[in-house]
Image 1 (tube, rainbow, N blue to C red):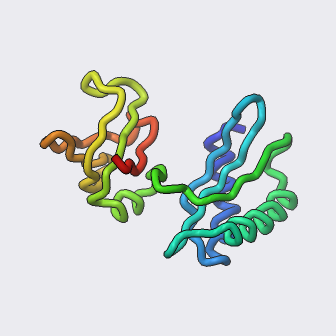
Image 2 (image 1 turned 90 degrees about the vertical axis):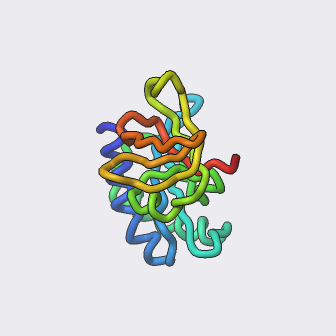
Length: 152
């Protein structure tokens, strides 16, 4: 199974659990680091999440993952806040954080740049609108490695 498909399955399993505890499901990532696999689930809520929120979601999600068993090898489950430099993925993220500083990393250089930093102006037809150095750029999300909040 490919990583993106697995992340989508985990997202679908996690969503009702996070909603049950009045948390927003920010994102899911399944990554290999130092030959170990990590399933990271990022949650948030008004006023921020605390350790108890993370533990509660983690316990419930862990039970659901044991029941459904979508991953057939060992991994570590981590449930946490996305932090102040959170990754922006969902369309709603690009609406919620208009006016904030962001950093866009490119898969391949864009106009000879590996990344661009500026102010998020919105989202238009899958293009991120960013104002940087007095210019407005429309960046297709398909050419980005990631887009995150950036407390410059």
